[in-house]
Every structure is written in structure tokens, then in C-alpha cells.
Length: 398
Image 1 (spheres, rainbow, N blue to C red):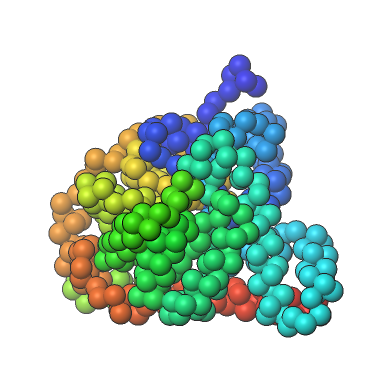
Image 2: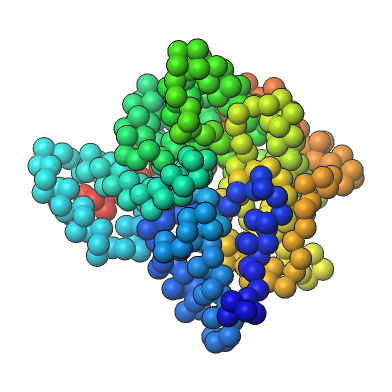
């Protein structure tokens, strides 16, 4: 196979620029099961053999970490629940052991301990890359409880608890007003952070400034930044999917096509990448919640990947997106599109829609309004439900 090996779409995307990073958007503990499920869905033997080789190139514990295509990991409460669901027998035993060893804990406390254990075990799988890369790569994101997104003190407390699990843990903090302050404090302490529940340029700029100022303060007092990174996540598809976007477009007589929606998130991301680089902010953009689409003249595209290819950013991709990208782009070229502009006629229409216009400006949304954004509310609700579902599952094991 090595003689006639054909690099996957993931490998070709990764090779476009040294600034690109591809991350796995799920706990590494389920990677092997996902690979097996993917391969079992393919009937053609030759194709199955090829995909099997391609998947090993993405991440293989037995290979040299410097050859891994996946350079980091993001997780969230729903993705952690997937670990418990996919590896149910193993995790039922682990959770019951936690219950047995901690009789004073109620089910919510046991859930937090089980969540931390999943994060710790997942992060340990990326420690070889963390160490071999000189602490540049191999970070694994663990998220504070989404239900405390307006409580700075509690977010900082949980963040320090998560960071203590493994040296390569990066803590996900929501981009609310309280979250931005938490990121500032954690940065001053040298804790790597991933700003999540972030959809707009004003949020990105608020985090970038908080990180820059927090790092300046930390350096003044001798904080060690040798094992530190900052990424700012734009949940691109969740921004575009907001109902208010559709409603405001309709009110103005604008047909919000799938192509326009995709261009909207791409426009904000490209602008943010350029600002962070030009002004020398220490944070790097990370693209999450990417969607398959649009379909143009009967052909299915993934513009969230294709149109941002070559940019100085991190792509984190969930298992479903990776599968779609590898299959759809198996024989399609992937080119550097970083300097490609949003078509003028599209941009003109988008800027007439207040939801987009506010998201595209630097200071057009106040800090206190971050938590009121529609995608923040919907994501907060979904992630909070996932934690409650986890707690109910743990409760059933008492």
C-alpha cells in the first residue's frame, strides 16, 4: 500500500502551510472505535484498505508522534457523554469504582470526578506529542461546567482543577463577560485556554485583548509560559444557524442562501485571522462546529474547510465531518484559499443584516451582551443538558 499510497484530504490540507493545525474534536479514547465503525461502513475492499492506511496517518499511538496529523484535541460535555455511551461497559465499571471509593460524594460530584477521569485519560494519549514538540502541540481541551458561564470565580476554580490533571490540558472557558475575565486571570497564571461559545469578532477581540494583557501581567511577575498556548474558537456553523439571521434577512427582502450563510462565518474568521497576525496577539484562531455545505450545481462542498484552507488557524473536526471530508474530497484538489475574498455582492447583502454586521465589527457588541447572543443561549442550553444527562446516568449507577 505504501508504494501506491494516496494521501487523504486531511493530509493534503495539513500540508498546505506550516501554520495549519488539524485537531480531533472528540475524546481520543473513542478514536479506535470510530475508525472501526468508519471502515465497517465501506464495502469495497480496496477502498477500505486505503482508508485504513489514511486513518493510521491521522493518529496512531504506535507511530512517531511527530508524524501524527492530529496535533491536538478538543472536547466538550456532549463529546464526553459520547465516551460513556460508546465505551459503556468500561466506563460503568470506572464510575462504580469512583462511587465505591468516595461514599461521601453525591451523584453530581461523582459525575465531575468521572468527567475529569475521561479528560485525564484522553490527555495522556497526547503527552508523547506534547513532550516531543517542545510543548507546542499535543494540547487537549477540557471544558468547565457550562452552567457556571457567568461565575468567574467558579470557572477559575474548576479550570485550575482541570489543569492539574495533566500538563497538556488546555481549559475551555465560555466567551461571556465573566468568561473573558476568567481567561485574563488564567492567562496571568500561565494556564492554557481555549475560548469557546464564541461566534463574533467582538468576542474574539475581547478574548485576544484579555489574553495579551493577562500574559503581560504574568510575565511581569515571572509566570512560566513554556507550556502555554491560547486559542480562540469560532463556532462557525452555530453562528450561521441562528434563527435571527434568517429572520432579519427575510425582513430586509434578502434570501439567505446556504452559500451566503457559509460565506458569513468564513468572512468573520478570515478577518479575525488577519487581525490577530497583524497586531501580534499571542492567540490563534480555531474553527469548530463546521458544517457540510453548500451544495452547488448538484455538487456537495465543505466550504468551512475548503475556503479557509491555508490560513493560519486550527481546524478541529468532529468524526462525522472528517468522514465526509475524506470521502467527498478523495479525488478533489485542495488549494490555499486564504487570500480569496468574499464576493462583493455577497458581502454587500450580508452587511445589510444587523446580526452579521454586528458580528463583523470589532467593538459592535458590548461585553455584557455576549451571553445574550442567540447561538450562546442555544449552545449553553445544549451543553448544559449534556451535563445533566451525564449526571442522571451516573445517578442511575448509585
